[in-house]
Image: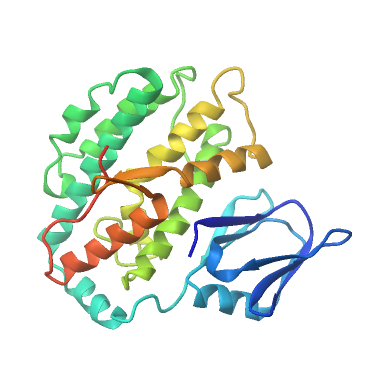
Length: 297
């Protein structure tokens, strides 16, 4: 499978399956066919899209994710494959039975990686990490001292230095709307990796909410949020700080998801990296390894 994100936002269309391919039919435009195995994420954003049932079935069969958007083109729902790995039942059981200290140790590693990624983002954009790497060294099991929160306060102030009153709030517009969209796409590809590794996306190592079906995906995507943050920071730098979530902005956010990641000494795609990380989590739960694999920041 390739790392292709297909965003249907510009024109009304009818989607069906023809000769095993995704067929996209649009008025007064040539028909388009796409192999399902090339699609990582299919985004339904336009209000006049119709799908045959076979589209969803084939997409899920090939491991792809469908994301539905609301009237503001913001993601509101996601469809994932039910079966993602031949050892899924065994891994579900190991995930459920995992010990609290194990999950706390995994979360410690994730938080450290996230803070280091934030530090790297600030170094790239502003030439200083604002002391974040020192905070990363202080993260303990379960992050009981909430170093994640302490790092966030420094990080957001420094990231958007031209907007002193900026706060990260998913209900606000402006830069927050762009971050929301980018995070939703990141969440989709992370959830895809989680299911592909035979893990249940609802069973998180840290995030837990009875209404959150993607708690583990929310955990594992944390170190990669700064990839979206950097894209938004660059795109909205003055005098473009009021950029809207239009076609060009979406293209930039998709581009952030296609950047390479330094992982195990090699430059890998985000999609491949997430798949390997999810697989390492499954191995920890099954007692086959002690530590989760994470990228180098």
